Image (cartoon, rainbow, N blue to C red; front, side):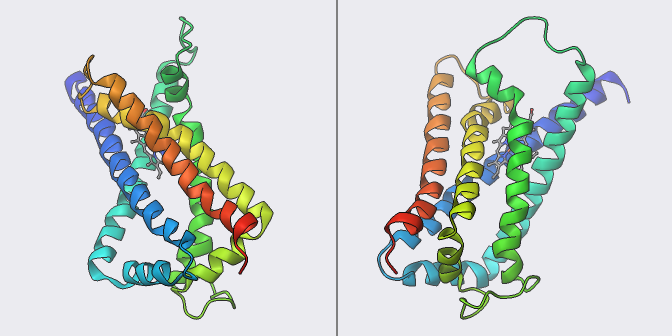
Amino acid sequence: MSNSNQYLASISRKVLTALAGLFLMTFLAVHLGINLLMLKSDNGITFSLVAKFMATNPLIKVIEIILFLCFFIHILLGIYITLKNWAARPVGYKVAQRSYTYFMSKYMIHTGVIIFIFLLLHLWHFYAIKIGVAPKNEVMKDTHDFYPLAIEYFQMPLFSVGYIIAFIFLGFHLSHALQSAFQTLGLNHDKYTPAVKMISTIYAIIITVGFSAIPIYFLFIYKG
Ligand code: HEM
């Protein structure tokens, strides 16, 4: 491959990773919005209604395929880009850089792999039941009845602690994600980049705190 073709391929891989990552960020916000309905004191009625709609609506099924594709593209290309960077720079940087941005960009692959392991467990605990690959838990009325299952899981301290730790790592990944995607897409600008960095941090905190609030609620506040 000529140098210019190699350059184009490398830019395309970065842009695809960024676009897939941005789609995943949108999905996470919607997912959090739905999960927070579990905190409504109506015994999970609203949450179950929305969860059933999400599980059965044909349009959502199409979006679900796009979602899996985005995960696949993001993870595969993220790993590929990192391995290529490592191979091109086997002795590391000569100049020590100490900024938070530099630190987080260096550890995107590490936080990413932890998220990936969590994702596999998460799919096994919830999604596998929905599609009938894993058996339905006895607390569930049907394969879409996730409210009692979530209570069952989140009242196990070890499960909840593991869940919160996974979201802390996701928070670190996300705190760098938006600004990195903007940079990849050529949208960085001296005037706006600080605002993008701040939005990235706020988004990461909302996702981590929001998802973590659910196990904390079922462990310490929920009375049945
Ligand atoms: C819901 C989960 C995830 C979201 C929302 C997300 C989002 C993002 C975003 C927006 C970026 C910035 C893209 C860019 O630099 O242009 C990024 C970078 C990255 N992500 Fe993720 N990500 C997620 C999960 C993962 C997973 C599971 C991995 C697995 C290995 C991963 C690996 C990476 C890597 C290596 C980078 C840096 C790529 C580069 O240097 O260009 N991510 N992520």
